[in-house]
Image 1 (cartoon, rainbow, N blue to C red):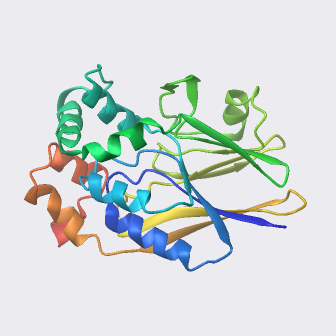
Image 2: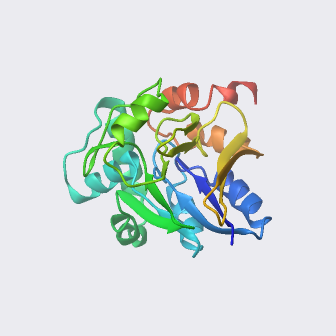
Amino acid sequence: MDKKIAIFSDIHGNVSALQAVLDDIDRDPQIEHIFCLGDLIGIGYETNEVLDLLRSRKDISYVMGNHDEAILDVIAGRDIYSSGAEREHHKWLAARLDPKFISFMQRIPTSYQTNYNEKELLCVHYHLQEPKKFLTVDKEPTEQKLDELYHSSTADIVCFGHHHVIHHFKTKNRLYLNPGALGCNHKPYAPYAILIIAENGATNVSFREVPYDNETFLLGYKKYNVPDADYILKVFHGNQHLNL
């Protein structure tokens, strides 16, 4: 039987974008599972709302993102990778994370592997240099570079996020897929991907962009005095708030 799954990444604390995508997924009864590729929180400020919505579902598997990890490190009193304004942003979010979500976040793995129709699927937030260290973002990935990174992997399909750009590469060795950033976009759309793995092992990928109303979310950065709001609104949301 063909298997149909949804894949999204980088929610970044944007609950209205997440709700729009989940509603779109729920309209397709053939989708049997969802994979979230990390950065559930961070950058956006709707931390508890996002986690509450995600925890209400039983059909999602997760991997840990760098922002998720940074916020957990703040809570645990560990040193974190960020500095300057980004570090203050992480501390601000950590102080507002409802403690009831901490154990859930702590249980999220760095990578997740499963099989569909004899195809091995690997989910990571981004390419790993070692078990818990992400590589620096490669802004110009190629089939050759990805095959070199995963030369020792047994995975047939590698799904990753972190770099907020849609990628779809297919080589003789495997399929590589980045669905884009669900919660960070320069327009009011939330992207995700649909992957079909046929009974014979053939794969088909499609990308969807779900429109949603992001006005309240964008204006909330200033309303709630989110640290580093000007930078976030410019870099991750294309200053859309200036036109509202």
